[in-house]
Image 1 (cartoon, one colour):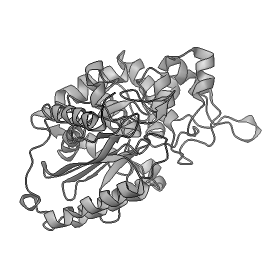
Image 2 (image 1 turned 30 degrees about the vertical axis):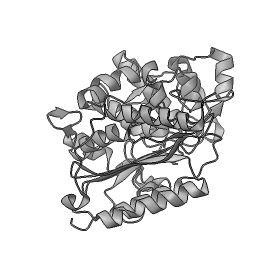
Image 3 (image 1 turned 60 degrees about the vertical axis):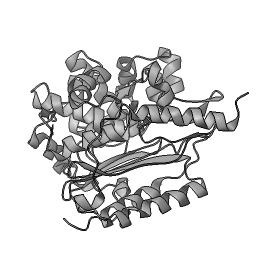
Image 4 (image 1 turned 45 degrees about the vertical axis):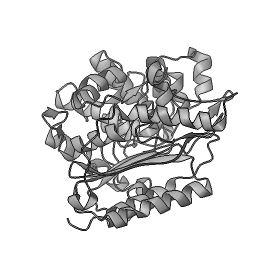
Length: 400
């Protein structure tokens, strides 16, 4: 039986090996990017307190400004069971709902820019089974549009029972069949009337992307986003040779999920879903944030047009009361990720597993905060810490 020391040594070597392949933005001293290293150093104390409380086993924080990494550090453990192992800065995280803006919404906007579809298109044009809201007297309401799905204002409920879907369609369940089930669900409100954060919206969007392109979301996003940007550690269903570098999430059937998506509906679909399933590293997300801050371009690679990015990261006018952009969150009740100091142009998203990204065009800053808060028993606490991390980073900007 391995000793605790040998286990930790092996895990550390694995984490160091992962670092050999990292290709994130170049690193500079915080002062070279107009930031205070003393103020950023407060992150160490915050993380130490959170780990002592048991808020989460471990974390990776990456802060970039004006295209340069000014802080990249790992804290705590990547796993607690069946044995402990240290966190590494280049380990691969289950991003959970960060999948929504990074993969799904970006893919859809690429199709908008290519003239393949419109935000104003009706959902039923792609999924005929999508029923409208039924009002008083059984009178059908207006049809939901694609922008309703992107802004969580379609009238769909938050989630559905994966076990019931599996009983109907088997496990794994094709996205096509799951999307038809979602389409038939009774809508809770007329489209555009209420904001209800719903994974079902983004599963529906993934099916629409597949219908229009003939490619799965995983294939389309890899071909049009991740590979062009050089995000070599970003994918759905991590390959077997990289599973050991994935940060484990919740224990299921006696073993932690490692390199297998945590979200039950995404897992039901074989790991590829519009609401969750994407895996990535802090460095790769830093590349993605540079593309967004570059108004759709990273180096010589252009993923989106400047106007496409602008439309995604503003509060969508038709859903203005709810503080949502197209895939991104700016000012909804979920926007505490951004803290109290970043301005109204900033935007981001969080993931159930303990991941988040927040981007501020005003200062050229990105905060990537990745934790394994669901490991091993889904009892971690992350919400307030996201705000505190964002506040420390924002307060570290001393030269605008």
